[in-house]
Amino acid sequence: MKLLNFFVLVSIALLIASCNKNQDEGSGTGDAIIVVKKSGTNTVYGVSLYAYSFSPFQSVKATSSADATKNYTLKENQGYKTNFAYEAPDTEFTVTKPVASTFNFTAVFENGVTDEFTDELTASALSVPVLDVPKFDATTSELTATWASVTDADSYAINIMDGSTMVFGSLELANTIKSYTLSATSSGWINGITPVAGKTYTLRLNAYLYEDNGNTYNMQSVSMAERSIVWGK
Image 1: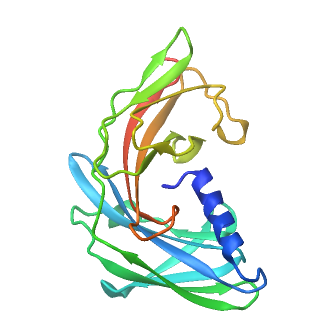
Image 2: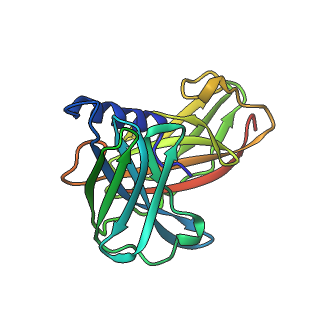
Image 3: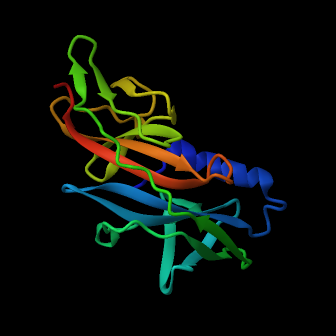
């Protein structure tokens, strides 16, 4: 379950590349994010971790000051060796909101250089968005999603999922926006995918909260809501 859309991931990589003093050296940055979603009628929470760099990683591990006995192993994300991730599995989501903690990352790069970096996670978490039933307009062949504003959300994004695979990803949407319309010809369909009439997909709304003292790409929390859709109906 990838929480940041492709645009955000690439932007982070470019940001770090521009700041890195020497592309032959190893220097990374980490991001711990509270993920919020629904499980049945319950709101549940998990923590996902991301590490970014200009130089390709060989391995990335992390620990939390809240639980020093737990070790996180991040893996190559979406085929990018400069982007490693640990995405909380469903079994790790609980009804208890994570406490504030410091996450310590240790990275080994393919060139043999090691680096340590940290990310401060507060206890702030977004509520789960209220996503209305999406509507498909047969006349215009457009799908429209609408939702209620999420308190403290900095931005939103829309994904279309085919099972566990993301097939559409919007750019980030301002927190003043409460609807989004797309069609089979909209930009954002991945790898030239065209939605199939009559096929069932999942529309996911992501709400993003950034860290107070971070740059644009340091996130504190992501919450999500999903609706099943049948394309063309």
